[in-house]
Amino acid sequence: MKRCMDVLLSLLGLALLWPLGLAVALAIRLDSPGPALFRQERVGLHGRPFRIHKFRTMRVGGAGPQVTAGGDARITRVGRVLRRYKLDELPQLIDVLQGRMSLVGPRPEVPRYMALYPPEARRAILSVRPGITDPASIAFRNEEALLAAAPDAERAYIDTIMPLKQRYYLDYVAHHSLGADLRILLSTAAVLLKGAP
Image (cartoon, rainbow, N blue to C red):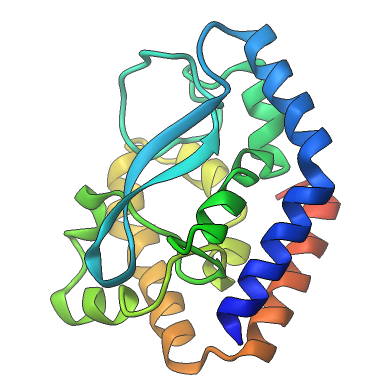
């Protein structure tokens, strides 16, 4: 049932939101040189790597940590708006349709950070498909602002935010259901409509 919901809702989302996606892609291309889409390796179901789809929000070639704090100089003008309203995540509906992700599930980490989770926690978290949203995404919707206030954003992410996210992920894995997923989707929509952390 969960996979059926993923397929139906991702198809509906892609059908309804393609004009918005086209407008976003055009805005990205006009704002800074480079492609509209960005792909990055993440860890998926059972530890299998995959390349996640996102709208590009940073300048091409900008080196730096794999976490992003608010005010990061690498973020473009359009990118700031996309990240505020989470519009950069829209292309992940393609990943859901292809079966690499779910609408709801623990957010997929880059391999470097996933390797830092304790083995048992890692196995549990990776026993379900990663998702576009989950309770941790809602709780840490202001993550970039929190990291911006830290003297070392990456260290703050690893030492403070990751352990808290781990608890959310493990709780989701232990108690997830179709009804819970629907509630999480509705909560996410409510947060996005507010458009603010």
